[in-house]
Image 1 (cartoon, rainbow, N blue to C red):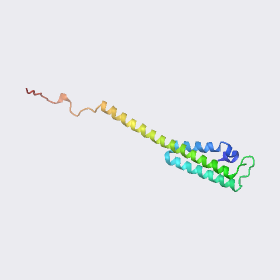
Image 2 (cartoon, rainbow, N blue to C red):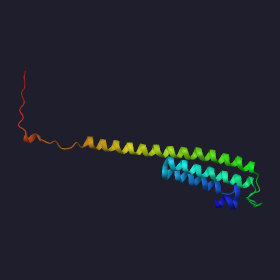
Image 3 (cartoon, rainbow, N blue to C red):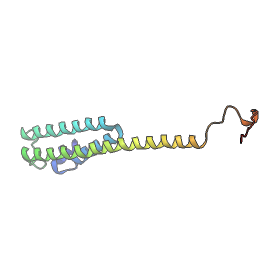
Image 4 (cartoon, rainbow, N blue to C red):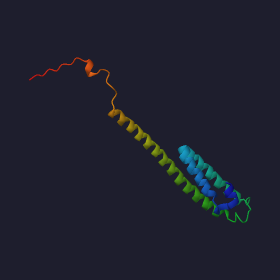
Length: 132
């Protein structure tokens, strides 16, 4: 957020917010992704209010009208949502696929190496009868 304050809308602040959401989605899953989206949305709303109420008066940085910030903020929120939710879903599906593959591999190894029989053929007295 400090980058947004010091550099304004043309700086890297929004890029860092997007990165925050992506890292959160990848490490904490869908709940973390949704939480980060809420945090980013609230951040954009706060900056909109600060600009529209002329609380941020740094002419060099915030020489922007509130309507322009609002349009940029809505675009950022939509792009953030699409990228983060998609990444979160893909990450979850990838984890599920790896888990399924690992289980399948374990079952395959078990089927190739069956457990030893309780009774071995050498201990049994077997006879074969052939009827013609």
